[in-house]
Image 1 (cartoon, rainbow, N blue to C red):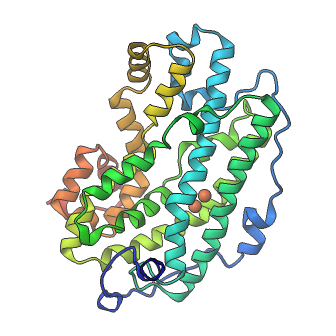
Image 2 (image 1 turned 135 degrees about the vertical axis):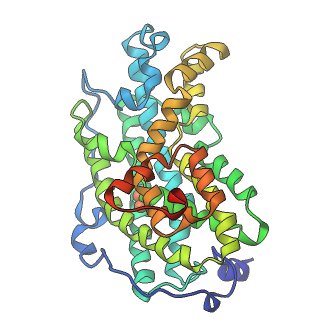
Image 3 (image 1 turned 90 degrees about the horizontal axis):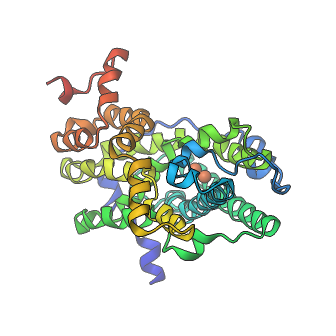
Length: 348
Ligand SMILES: [Fe+2]
Ligand SMILES: [Fe+2]
């Protein structure tokens, strides 16, 4: 078992047979001076502050729905606290399950790609960053529980964040020989998408300062990771054979949705806990997250990532382009034509 785990690559096949592109500009040279694990203190939750939200209501629109808002401020505040807990739990799971294992494989030279040595060395720093993010998210949730006496209901009552089951579904759609590469793909996707939470919360002064500082610490590290995983994508795509590209490309929108789509099951669980019936839960969720709006929001959040995939030639494959179109992701690529970039298939 250990020997198999040792040998297992994310992308199978002989590494030497894959083309090598040696270009890599490290963003980790000043890591010791910049990384939050080195530079930032433990963030301490200083207790509930009257009038402060635990989470921006606009990022959890079920609390703005009349069937919830009418239940009063205590219910809304309680749901926002559970949403913050869920975000912290999501972060810990994402780092532990999806990012650390991939960065570890890269660091040990078992990604299946021929990557520059410097890139392997930097992957160790990402493992450390992500372990710190997982640790401080869990620690912060524990501090809030101790201070408020409110348990973390989602993490205790649900199977896990929805990205876990969505990733399993994605893996099932890959040919057996390519299973494992979804991990690399999902790490690229989740690490290069800067979520609304990471960008909005540090600036939101309705939230306790410790919450904002914690998310800011994370966002600053993720800025470096974004550049790194964009580079991983630039190495991955040219190294794939045409048939591998055709198998993997159409799954990219699924990976994007796995990361960005709201966790409806978690929300349903919390709405049930505040007394809504199954029908009421369905109504609140479908009216709070109308499908067209979710699609539009994901398209906007993923526009830069879609451009990255277009730049490496991923959208040159017709089925891949179709899947991006079906997911509503390529409108923004077309907009990028204005900036001078024209994906071949789009203009053909
Ligand atoms: Fe992270
Ligand atoms: Fe990261």
